[in-house]
Amino acid sequence: MSFLDTLKSVFSKKDDKAIYLSGFKKSNAFGKRLNELQFEYTGVNDEFLEQLTIVLLESDVGIELADMICEKLREFADKYVNVSFKWAMNFLMKTMKEIYEEYPDEPIRFNENGPTVILMEGVNGSGKTTTCAKLAAMYQKEGKSVGFVAADTFRAGAIEQLAQWGERLNVPTIKGRENGDPSAAIVDGCRYARENNIDVLLCDTAGRLQNKVSLMAELSKMNRVAGKEIEGAPHNTWLILDATTGQNGLSQAEIFNNATNLTGIILTKMDGTAKGGIIISIKHKLHLPVYYIGLGENPEDLRPFDLDAYLYSISEALQDNAG
Ligand SMILES: Nc1nc2c(ncn2[C@@H]2O[C@H](COP(=O)(O)OP(=O)(O)O)[C@@H](O)[C@H]2O)c(=O)[nH]1
Ligand SMILES: [Mg+2]
Image 1 (cartoon, rainbow, N blue to C red):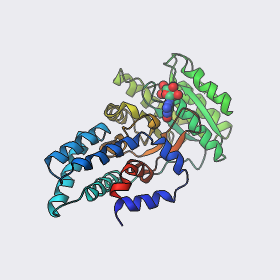
Image 2: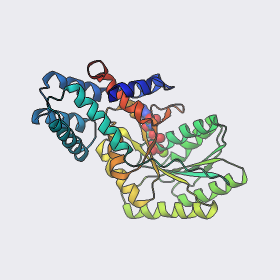
Image 3: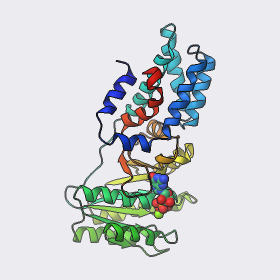
Image 4: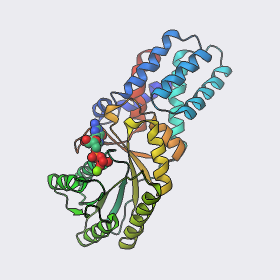
């Protein structure tokens, strides 16, 4: 069985197939572009690798990885004469999977002895507040009690935005003071969570990339005060990344990862972009797992990231010809 056939059969056994495929609709453009390469395909030669590099760059795999993938493909093709397009595509998808899986994903950490504290970080507009709402809806469905900390004291209206989600979802919101110290809100939130048996405390923060020194100071203070209130807190520190920002997202991830100890990524707005290659490139560069993907603006539009579903969505356009 070819790799793409295996992928198809793994995918066909999954729940939520339709949701993944509609959410990854745009990623399919990546597959379609790959599929078009077959019409001029005469083998794994310079022209083909150049075209392939362009498609990989357009999907935000990044130049370093694109070169690495092409180099591997060239080595593979050199070993076997007359590599067909179908083989080349199978090799490509398999290589993307291997790159993602090179570093094992750490599971999400839960606190067995009290509230699990999750810090949400990321630049303005990346989807932090909306993702707080989505995670809350998900944890509530699992029977967990959830609390919000509105610690984005920097952006006007940010606190109210989270509080409104809190009202809609019936999640208590501990509010920071506008322009106040976000760490004070974190302390209040942790105490509230402890006293009210909250299972998961979601802390919405401000992402101030403009000034890295103060970002670092602010984030490390939030980490410190959370850890004083609840043992091991924050148990998870997630970067909320807008997938449509492409390779720029990778440099954001690097800055936040240097400023704080990121434990994972949530990639938002995957419903609006064909630039999903960023997933592979983040994993390769920072070894950080993508835990969830955002597929829309509503609380139910969050799904665990599933590598096979993602690769299948790309390869779907290839299945007929290369499967
Ligand atoms: N299409 C789409 N829009 C999203 C997604 N996540 C967030 N948004 C939208 O992006 C905008 C900014 O989100 P917000 O949560 O306020 O970002 P924040 O500044 O990081 O808190 C809002 O209009 C959201 O509705 C997503 O997964 N898909
Ligand atoms: Mg916000």
